[in-house]
Each structure stands twice: as structure tokens, then as C-alpha cells.
Image 1 (cartoon, rainbow, N blue to C red):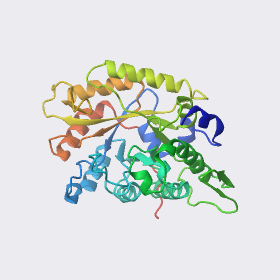
Image 2: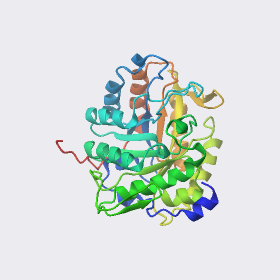
Image 3: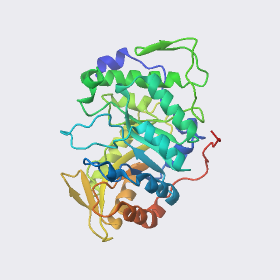
Image 4: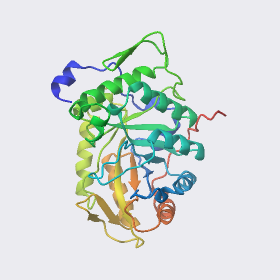
Length: 348
């Protein structure tokens, strides 16, 4: 969003610090100040024309839950663009999370990320609140403005206006989920005398802004319940140090100075040799390393102020089940998920 738009459109609702989510099981499992937890990005293997590559994935997500990982992440990619080269999750993010919610018990269900400008906030809020309620308060909603231009004309929308529409959708979404209901007014629609149901399980759903979303850093500091950014270089300590500067600059702009979590992600080729050095592949898009190098990197990110890392193992040559087991047995004990808040279960 350019400065003119930022000055003209001032949202009604703002991001919340940790106390607003003290009863939210997903948020509390993932985030604490000065600590880092680990999540797993889906799909575990990329779709390349055959849906069978995703067969059995939910069984492995059950293991992710049982092993004690903090979160499992799904991606939102409405349309496959062959020129982009990555079909993403294939399944609809919300529908698939509902399926996984029924097969898991404690792991946070995170999106990385729902494309907010492409859909109306009423539909976004209805689906999000439903999944959060069905899962007992485990939905952590990563949101983005969209990086695949081909999707926007398919929805009859302008790719160039995605930043403005993103900010409007965030404000509208939060108005819809206010506990007291009430009238809703935004450039994307108005409501009075009606209310959106259900409400979230514990009163709120964390909105994690992904990247810049064409917003200013002050907007992200004010509006985001958390921030997910790419890590930059991960082959040595210099990348985490630069990331620390970015995180510090963002947190300085949080109005109440309270804790809000930072997240990052890494596409990982985890090799069997534990001491294999951290080696960037594909211009740094993929990191090949053994578990010792990964543990060192995660520690560096924790020192930088990162609170959660989503690991994608799609590029790894080894079987997904084998990698998950190694991560659970050798890496997760160094960065345990947080205990203390149980999901708000009900027999729906």
C-alpha cells in the first residue's frame, strides 16, 4: 500500500498482543517470548501431475501431532500456474484444515497463507471461525496479499489493487468476528441487524501478516498479530543477524510495546549425515544440511527474535516419514512446543 492509501484508509481494528490470545490453544502452543518452536509445512511432497503423491499425508500429519510439533501449515493456492512451477497444497486450505482438525488433537493449524484480497471477508471469516471452533481454538491464520498475478483476473480483481484490498479485508474480517457483533462498515460491504456465526472458540483468531503485503512497516507494526517473513541467507550467522535487525525494527513500531511473535520458514533438504554443512541450493531457496547444522541455525534464529519456524521438507530426497522421525527425536527436544493451554473441545 502506498503512503497515500495508508493515510486515507485508517482501519477500525488493530492487532493484538499476547494477552488477547492467552486462551487460544494454537497461539499458545506456538508462541512465547524468547523461545522458538517448530512446525511442518504441507504438502510433504510436491504435486507433479499425480494426486497419489499426497496419499497418506494426513496419516503423517497425525504423527506430527503425536510427535509434539507445534504446528502444521497449509498453503492457499487457488489456481495452478505452470509458469510458477509450484502447485502448492492442491486441496483448498480451509477444507483441508477441517479434515486435519478431525484427525489431530493438539497441533496448531496454521495457514501460510490465505490470500485475503481474493475472497470476500464474510466468506473468509465464516470459514475461519468454523475451523477454529471445530478444532477447539487451534487456527492461526497466516494471511497474504497474493504473489500469483494470474489468480486475480480469474476472480475479476485487479492485481495492482491487492494492497488496498488486503488492508480493507483485514479490517472487515475483524469487525465481523467481534464478540458483541454489531454493525459492520467497510469499503467491501456493510451489515446492520445481522451477525456472523459462529464466533471463534476463544473470542479471537490471530492474523499473521506474511511479508509486506504492500503495506508500510508502521501498518504491520500496528495491525499484525504476528509477522511471517522469509529468513534471508541461512548458510551462516550473517543471515540471522540481518533478520534480527528487521524483527527489531518491526517490534519498535508495535504501539503498546507488547509481545507479538515473529515467524519464518525454510525449505529443507535434510540429509542423513548429521554433520553435513549448511549448503544453499537453488540460489539459496533450499537449504541442504544435516541435523547439527539445522539445530545451530534454529538457535541463531531464536537469538534473532524468531518465535516459530515452519520447515518444508518437499525437496528432501529421503522419505518424509524418516525425516519427521529424525526431526522429532533429534531436533524437537531442543525447541519444544509450549504446554499449558488445552484445546476447547466440544462434541460437535
